[in-house]
Length: 298
Length: 328
Image (cartoon, rainbow over the protein chains, first blue to last red):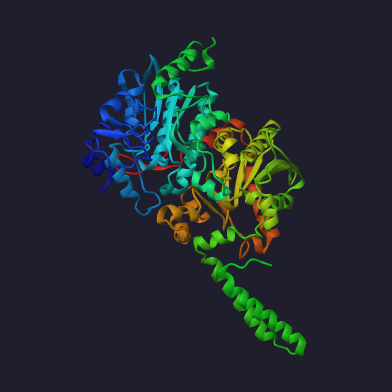
């Protein structure tokens, strides 16, 4: 079955996303879909309740991973947006064993066509171009489609002179597309550079997890770098580092708070404040005459 | 003692046999010239056969050979007046990335590359060619200096990866690499990149964005090392041989995929068998690329570079029937 057939068949999709099981959560001990267990404090939470709290545990503040459609719905004013490039789907350029099946499963599970959603809408009245990655889709990894959609989103922001906001969530470059994936790091970073040169505003929000080839490219290149509390952010995986240096790492190693302390981030922003913080930055920039950048001075 | 690669054993055996025969001839004052000639012809034939049909995994082994020319050897071999420069002006000097200035047949250039050691002691000092953030930041400093003075940049890639360590993370390994990708994409001077040995993932790409990407015949370049891929795919690092095949990491594969622009042929048996010749070939290829790029205006250079990377990618649209490559 080719992609088009697959997509038509399998997903008159359940686009309504379910709350995500956290990566550390043992599934199976609570009934799925009705109650979620907080992996941090163990509280049993009604899914509906969790949803109302933006997927943040009301007891301890643990941030559950959020799907890309939910991120779009809950970040844009009124949950309204126009989506870009939802037609782009991965090819299998290396004829990599099991890759097509993996893609099909990811599509089926998420109702998405790839690991990133891009589009435009408004936040606190300011028009913006936004991208949100989805960690459920092959770990949010970046292959050709993710790179292309990000690059196109950046180009749209440049042409329209809109600010750009990217919510990153990714395990890194997608191994199954080999060097084509690695080169998406260069492609997206080049697009960011062009955008910066025209004075464009780029706010990068790092969410759990942002690692490898995504943290080492566009995700670290924002004018403002924000992260959600507790998000894992880093270049190399913890296990590899432990094997390499043969010593134990601090418990908060590679968390958002760790990066903040080491001067790698502007702020850690709790999810319930995210829209307000984004709104503030957008307002300050709009204060220069336009929601973009330097060409505002006439 | 020279490192012997397993698939080269028959060659070494034959070489030893010839040497023994020659010794015997000298000692006994016998003339066995015909026999020696016959064996030497067989050796020559066997060499060609062996190296013409290398598997990706065998190439990986050649790329990792300890006698493979290092960045400093190449710099000294192909430049005159090469002067190494140190430090990122922020934290430290990273010995895993080296850089400096010099003249390539009279053309002023900045040359930067990963530096591996040639023995264990040197490798420990060089951290096996695995850079920390300060290495990428030193490279960035030298590249921005090159841009200021209008000098073309040559970068040589040869690393098993950016260093996965605690301090590297604390100092922003991701940011250092990301910034280089961003800045290199828009430097207004020509950048020629040569993958000379191992090109492992972001650690290699961190000094690898350029106008021309050249690759030595037996070098490899991949999003993840064959061992890493094997561990993830088949939960067994010993499957690296299979992964090397699957991942399409050889110069020939990457030329076909459109990731690199040209393959630089190596001397028979690999660059370590004849370093001066290997360096001559690298120099010729780099110079040819520079002569193509140097007449271009800064704007054309940067625009072309943007398009080069913008086009990379393979995907399909649900709206049309044929898979397409990238492009706005």
